Length: 383
Ligand code: PLP
Image (tube, rainbow, N blue to C red; front, side, top):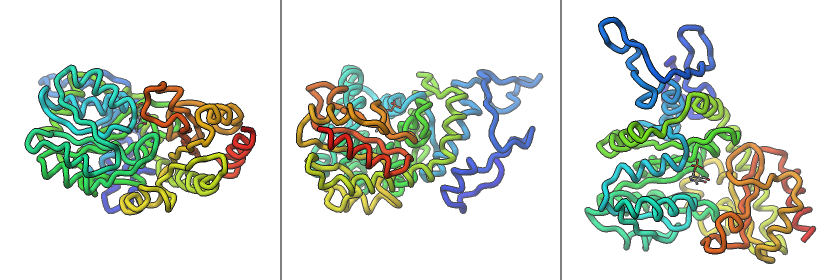
């Protein structure tokens, strides 16, 4: 690796992808290395120190090192999806271990915990999102191994105090893991607030172009638990392919530019619509009257992210009627890409979903903000 050291600012590290120059060609863009296997010398030593790409690949080492630098972590691991990364954090534990997980966050995680991890033997206590008292009450000293929070939490963007959650987890001898997908390392660096593990659906803001499914875990410390996570990836095999790793690294080069623009656009949109007569409320931690604003202002820097949700007075019918009229926003799941998306989570998660049926999740992209405001205005006018 050529020379970008920690003294440089995170955006410089990201833009220059830690300053790698390919030694054989001088290329400033790393090659895509599709190899699955690595040659040995006649004395049977490994020429490059690597043996097989499920164990370790030259392709994902680069985005891993960049992500670890951006998060201020000791190490990072990329996975074939955000869910694979989350699952590995729990699979590194043992059947019988106790974990505490927030209830209302990315819906796939509680679904997987109930459908796979509990039958496997993990003891899971679900607690309300954003609240510290129930979290503290759920802790079992010496038994709870992991606390999992997501902040801001998809899709209500409820904020949890990372520092306070870390203190609660550590007092009971547990680790704190934070799904920081919505914040990204541009806005939140959970390790600085005491988190032990940071998780990202790299599919979202880290990559930013809606063309890669990927996940990541970052560790504050390389300890026995982290070695267990590494084992899960190596033996379970949920590694990221070379082309996806390359696209992810390319996406991360513009992370700061994108996330700042998305945050500016989102704040302008949240402010514009906060008193709209057809809306119950705009859920966005950047608004001064949002219940999570004070904590978010403390633990997020330079913005509040590109995610917000709109709650409609007219319920799900009004949401779907407005969504049908949108011309700039794309009706699609996912988030964090350069293009703005909307999703009615109620339609996707069904009537049992804990997500309010009147909620429309909005992922703000980097388009001109006036086009985004104009599109939402005309859609709301039409209902
Ligand atoms: N965490 C959050 C906050 C998400 O929004 C998602 C996906 O939407 C995930 C985790 C899961 O990530 P992936 O879809 O990359 O598996």
